[in-house]
Amino acid sequence: MLHRAAILLLLCLGLPLCQAAGRTGAAVTAHPIATKAAMNAFERGGNAVDATVAAALALGVVDGFNSGIGGGCFMLIRKPNGSFVAIDGRETAPLKADRDMYLRDGKAKPELSRTGALAIGVPGALAAYDLAIRQHGNIDLAEHLGQAATVAEQGFALDDAYLSRLGQVVKKLRKFPGSASIFLNAEGNAWPSGHRLKQPDLAKSYRSIARHSADWFYRGPFALKTEQWMSANGGLINRKDLASYKAKRREPVRTIYRGHEIVGFPPPSSGGVHVAQILNILEPFDLASMALDSAEFVHLVTEAMRLAFADRAHWLGDADFAAVPKGLASKKYARRLAKKIDPTKAAPVDAHSTPSNAGTNLFGKHTTHFSTADTEGWWVTCTATVNTTFGSGVVIPGTGIVMNNEMDDFSAQPGAPNVFGLIGAEANAIAPGKRPLSSMSPTIVLRDGKPIFTVGAAGGPTIITQVVLAIIQVVDFGKSPTEALGRARFHHQWKPDRLLVEKTLGQAIIDALLAKGHTVEIVNTLGAAQSIGLGQDGKAFRGSPDPRGRGAFTVRHNE
Image (cartoon, rainbow, N blue to C red; front, top):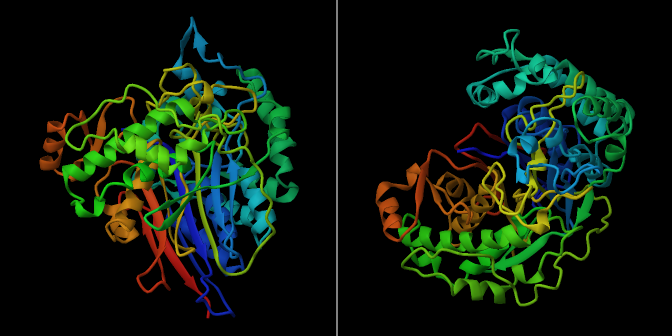
């Protein structure tokens, strides 16, 4: 099973119960070095936004096959005054892009959107981190970059998790000297276990940005090097593309599920809309009366997933280019879809459904402005990615920066699947400057107006279903986030028509699902989620790195 290479950062800062003289900070990330970077930011007087950016930059060093400033991100921030801001650092299509750029003889050629120059979207992560720090942080971006540069200079020992991912893409990396010179040995093979990987070029890039601001990346030497490399290798991105990139502030998606407010990310993320839609479809059903480990429960949730993903394929795209129907998130529409579910058998979904008010755009407004806040009460959840493992495989020579392959998230052709098997339609067609649809779903759950936990994940389209399952298990079944993330997962995305289940679900349940008419595929693991929540006393932070990975959680107390 191919997993989307996305990294989730979840950080919280400053509950009202904290001492006025100090702060309590918590961080959970996919790598211990990144978690340490977040805690160092707290120690230097930073807030949760600072800690998020510090962790993100460190992940670009130690987990660069997943994320980095050559990719993009979504960051959802809950401020101390209770307001939210969603910062969109999603990549964009180059200005010279066109909707048929991956067609050859009238058919989509997948390799073009997955490897090499044409696969690369204009990176947005750095612009998002810069915006977040300028608007909401306590520490200059330059200081965070300097800390991460030191990690790149000193290096880190490659573990089995890193080498497993590296081993999957050796052939891809060999195609690009800028990548092979860093991640492969002189013979063109993966480094051995324990090798200390140092990245001096990436360190230099970080320090150059620290000295000259993000302009070094978007308007200066990096932009020039990128344009030159693209010109020599058949790519489209030029200095104008990079100079015109802007991170955007957007309004989050909200729904109420069994008395809990669910706050998610808006398009170009499909996560916020479809997490809300799946939960709304399931709300009429008494899930709590079912056993979590039962075919009845898995079947009902699967059918809701199937219906939502059919809608995703047709309706979702960049809200600046496509009208996303308001009705997708409505309770009335969800009740109509819920009536289509047969509790006794799997029901194939031939096509998307249409909300009654499909002509009303849910996201007609795209920008909101917030004042900087640096007092206690921040909650931040961020998902970052270069898409598949090591993205496009390209490192612009001399920069150390791994470039994404997010152009594969567009619909190259109606009905043509991307690397994750997802299909799309006109709403997600390629257009100059457009952001491709994403499944990244950073989410914050509130009760009585107060945050109780955050959740998000890596794993392509399974991100949406991982988040849904975590919320259901916490809200309906009273599980802690840690317990929720440890339970067996399952996933359905409409096309292909198959139900993916983790092998830990158990053969008896799998047999019962087969009897209901599901096509079942058993996998070892589905994705990797992270969460931060409050303990039962409502005071202490509880972090939940996914037990399937190597994530780390740390809390810092200042008295």
